[in-house]
Amino acid sequence: MNAPATPPLLLTAHTGGVLRLILNRPGARNALSSELMAALKSALDSAAADNASRVIVIAAEGPVFSSGHDLKDLARHRADGDAGRAAYAALFAQCSELMQAIVRNPKPVIAQVQGIAAAAGCQLVASCDLAVASTSARFATPGVDIGLFCSTPMVALSRNIGRKAAMEMLLTGELIDGDKAVQVGLINKVVAPEILDGEVMQIARKIASKPRGTLKIGKEAFYRQLKMPLAEAYTYASQVMTENMLDGEACEGINAFIEKREPKWPT
Image 1 (cartoon, helix red, strand yellow):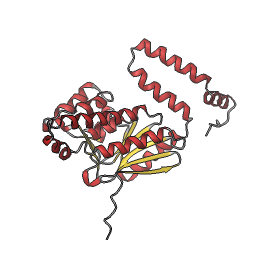
Image 2: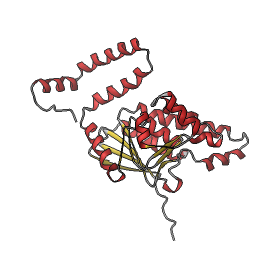
Image 3: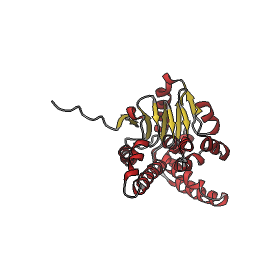
Image 4: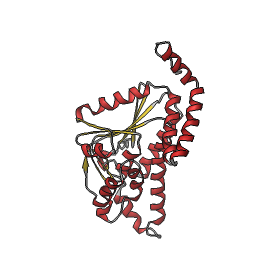
């Protein structure tokens, strides 16, 4: 008798320009194992080059969005000859590369959060361009409770919310609900669980209807200018807009506006 097939770590679905990437380790609280992170990054990289994928949604199976790294797996490496140093360095570097891949991806990425997002799971939410959560969602960076400060999640968290709010989450490790997450800027909105799918798809489809090249230009410029001093940011943004004005999408969009018609974007 054949052994049952192992379920895929990542499920995918494609509808109308929207690619859904679904974490599929519900029995392990969707912990970000090295294998799951590799599967997610591979899917993101493929989507970046796929013209049929205009928007990416990251969702999850089960009651937990992601609990972060698998602590049992981490603990097993204590028995390594170097007490786990090489394994830990590789895992955290892999996680950091995954989060940067989301930011660098030319397609907008939306987190759909149905349950708890903790530690690296919260980092995953913070790394996405947009995030929508259900009223049952909770967010935390609880590493301080087990003597492992959430230093890598801190990078994404501190670039999304104010310093005081970020430090409160990092220092207390306490869960915050969706309303608080909206208030501090971690997510965009919170909705009832039964309409979460529909709300996310409505936003995704609206974005997918926009010109692809313009979205790519805008997302890249958004993240690059954040790192610059004010005057440098304006100089850079002015250069981006100049090049954008010369692009075919801007020509079509502006002509359509002047002629009072719907624009015809390239497919």
